[in-house]
Amino acid sequence: MEDPKKINEYDSLSPEDVQENLEQLTNLTKKQQERKDGIHTFATDVAHEVQGKNMSVIKIALAEQRRQQEYAHIVKQSKNQKLIYILLATVFVVGGALLVGSSLNKSNQTVPIPQISQQKVNSIIFSDDQSVLNVTDFTRSEIIQAFKQKYDFVSNQGITNVVTVKDSNGGLRALSGAEFIASVGTNSPTELAPLLQKDFMLGVYSGIEKKEAFMILQFDDFDTFVNQMRVWEPFLLEDLITLFSITNTYGSVIFSQPFSSEILLNKESRILRDANQNFVLGYTFADRGTVIVTSSKEALTEILDRYSIQSIQ
Image (cartoon, rainbow, N blue to C red; front, top):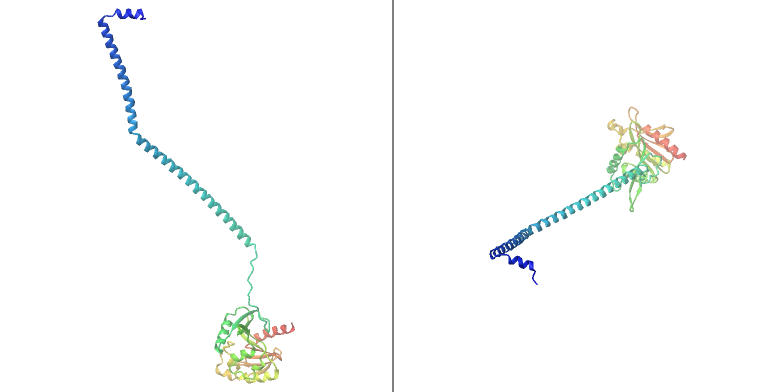
C-alpha cells in the first residue's frame, strides 16, 4: 500500500517540476558516473605507468642484489686474507723463536772436533808433527822435489817426521832405510843396503832461525856399516846436497874436502867442514846401531836429546 505522504508530494508537482527533477537526477547520475570513470581512469593510468617501468625496477633490484653479493664476497675474501696473514705471521714468529732458541742451545754445547783418521806413525825420536810422502813410482829427482815441497811448508818449531810410503798390495807401507837410500843415494855402495833393513826416519828440524833436513838410519853390524860409510863419504855430499837443501857457497872445491873424525856431543862423528871450519855435513853414531845424518850442530843437538829420552823410555 503506497505511502499517502509520497503520493501527496508527487501529486502536488507540476509537469514542469517533474521534468526538472528528472533532468537533475539524470545530471547527477552522469556526474557520479564521470567521477567513477575518472577514478578508474587514473588508477588504470598509474597501473599502466608502473607496468611500463616494471622492467627497469627489476633491473635495478637485480643490480642491487649483485652489488650486495659482490660486497659480501669481498668482505669474505678480506677476512680470509687477514686470517692467512695472521697464520703466516704466527709461523714466522714461532719459527724465529725456535731458531733463536736452537742457536742459543748450540752455542752452549761443545762442538766435537773431528779427529784425523791418519794415525801417527811411531818414529825413532819423538816428533812434534807428521807429514806423509807417497813416493810410489817416483824417480830420484821426483822424490827429492816432493820432499823439498814438504820441507818448504814446515812451519812449526821442533821436529817434523816425514813418513815416506809406497803402494804395496793395495795398501801403503813405509819404506825401509835400504829402499830409501837406494832411491836417493846414487853413489851409495851396494853392500850398504843389506845393513839398512830396519826402520829409518826422514825429518825436518825447525829452529829459531832456520830449517834443516836430517836422516836417522838403523843398521846391523857396526864395523861393516862404518866401513861402508867411509866408502860413501866422497860422494855423500853430492848425493844429499839437494835433499838436505844445503847452500853451496864454497864452489866445487867443497866436494873434494875429506870428512874428519870428531867427538861431537860425546858421540863418534864424521864431519865435513869448509875452509873456515863451518859445519857442512856430518853423520854421528847415537849408538852402535843408529846413525844421525845432519847439516848442523844445532839440529844434531836436538835430535840426540830426543833420542836419549826415547832410549830411556
